[in-house]
Length: 106
Image: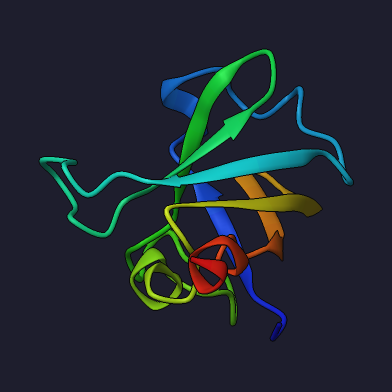
């Protein structure tokens, strides 16, 4: 699996970012019925639920990380990630399990 990094955005609409720690495990879920973005990828944390989304605009994607649009076809409906680096308004994360192995096995 190629290394894939993304930025979490929108945290201020949920729980903020103060609780985020490097190494935290996250779950990603595609949200194709999202009325604002058909390539939306929800970011969840066990025990809290939705904490934000994978950034998908030039204003929210940080550095060379992937936008939700670039990441969307490279992961399954569900995937796993972990926090690598904390940012002022989100976090830079790495995909650790793209969730495609299940689809290939079927």
